[in-house]
Length: 303
Image 1 (cartoon, rainbow, N blue to C red):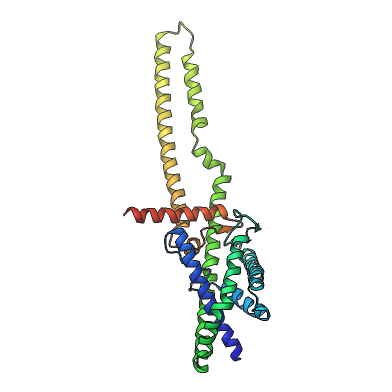
Image 2: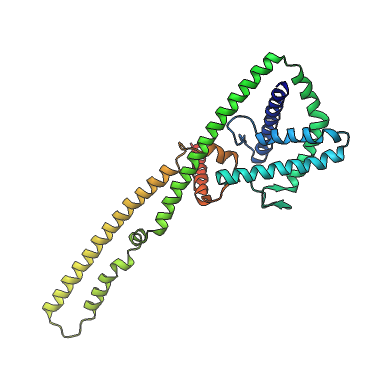
């Protein structure tokens, strides 16, 4: 039992170190603090799994730095690929995408990151883990038990919170998808925004009256002018009504869109943490949320 508790502590420590490396790396690239991580807490479990896999599988060859480097590249790449596939399969979202990098495999892993992980594997076995092992081995059994219980409870709460956030985000994207699809399919809305065909009949009637033959007496001419005036007034009145209807419809559509992209909803932390995140089915709608987040930031900066 003691061995399981030690593994839990190792897993948590390396998940935290991985999270810290991600935060520093992404914050330097973005020139701002980025709270990186799938979970809400300061941990990246994929690093914990990767570190434990390296320590377990490579302990027999820990004497050879080249073997550690190449094996770490392979092990961490497999872990990252499987993690990306699982997240995409179960949540319908690709959290990172290396498709724009050279020597990538389906955008889930790439050679550049694998090389970094290989270097980290060498540092882990030769430098980091001996110190971590010494510290953990000196924790009293009672404290170790309490620590593991706290870690387990924290992970469970964080997982429940994150899964709830993901479900709400997917529901939000689905509603936004339905909204945009309804706009695309609804031809009536297009007609509201295009009054040319609707008013064409009035222009035709006016043209017919303008083409009256010469010799029409004064009464017909006066009647023509009267009808033309009424047609112009009717056209102007209908134009104004259509404009009012357009404004009212646009306001309703805008209000609905803002409701669906309001920051009070779920998912913005994940969108900020993974700027390259793509939704398999709702990627366009995810782009809307990303734009809404950008507008919110711009308004805050302008104040």
